Length: 417
Figure 1 (tube, helix red, strand yellow):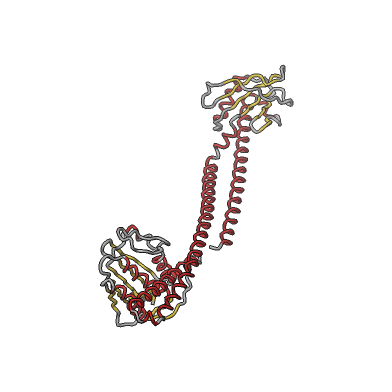
Figure 2: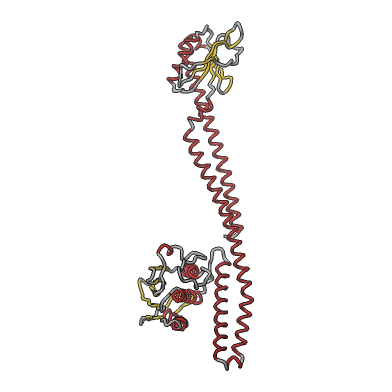
C-alpha cells in the first residue's frame, strides 16, 4: 500500500470517527430531551390528579401548575392544604403512574411567606421520611405547594439504558478502531524500515559479488589456471557460488521492492517436459556428489503451459535444492506429472527429514524457517518457499505440501494447461 493511500485511509477514518461521535452525542441528547419531556408530562398529569382530588374547584384555573426549574414544580390549589392528605395523594398518584423516584414537597405559609411544612420521601423506604430542604416560593399563588425531584436526572438516564448500552458498545468499537488504525500505522513504519534495511543490505552485497564474479572470470581465462585441474575446479566453484549468491540477492531485492510482493511476469508458451529435463540435468550433479539421484518420469504426451520461464525455473530449482539440503541420507527425488481436469498435476517427492505438521501452515511465511533439529549446516534467508508461493499465486496455480517427519516431503503443483 502506498503512503498516500494510507494517509487517505487514516484521514477518512478520523473523519468517520468524528462524524459517528457527533451523531451519537446528538442522538443521546435528543433522546434525553424526549425522555425529560415525557417525564414532565407525566408529572403534570399526576399533579393535576392530586389537585382534582384535594380541591376540585381549582381545576377550573388556567394556570394550575408552574415548572420553576427542570426538577421543581409549584401547584396552585387556592385552598388550605392538609400536609398528611397531600403526602398520601402524591405518593399514590406517583405510584399509579410508575414514577418510582424520590421526591420532596413543601407547603407555602402566607403568614411567614415561606415554604414551611415539607418532607423528603424515599420511594424504596417510605418510613425513611425526613425534613425537606427549603424550596423556593412563587409570588403569583396564595395557597400552593411545591414538589421537587432531586434524582430526576438519574431517573431519566435510567430509562435510557438501551440507548446508553448501545452507545457504549459503539464507543468501544471506535476505541478499538482507533487502536487498529494506530497499529496499522506502526506496522507500516516497521515495514518501511524493514524494506529499507533489506534494500540497503542487498545493494551493499552486489558490489563485492560483482567483483568476485569478475575475478573468477579472469581466473578461468588464465592459461596457468587452465593447465591446473585443481585450480580450475576452485575457480569454477567461485564462479558458481558468486552467481548463486547474486541470484539470492536479486530474489531478496525483487521481493522487497514492492509492498504487495508482486512479481513481473513475462508469460510465454513452455514445453513442461523439456523444461523439467533441463532442470533435472543441471541439478543432478549436486545429487550425485552425495550418491543421490533424481528420477524424472516423462509422459509420452508433451504438455504446454503458459508461464514465466525464469520464475518457474527458479522455483523448481528452489524445491530441488531444499530436497538436497534437508536430507540426512542419500538424497532421492521422484518427479512425475500427468493431466488432470485440464491441469497438469506436478509431483515432487523426496526422502528428506520431513516437516512437522504444526509448521506446515507457516512454511510459506516471509523469513520463516522450519526448525531443523540437529541439522545446523542449512543456511538461508527464509525466502525460498515464500518466493515459491508468490510465483504460484501470481500464475493462479495451486500448491499443496504433504510431509511427515522422517519420511520426506511431497509437493504437488496444479498448473493450468
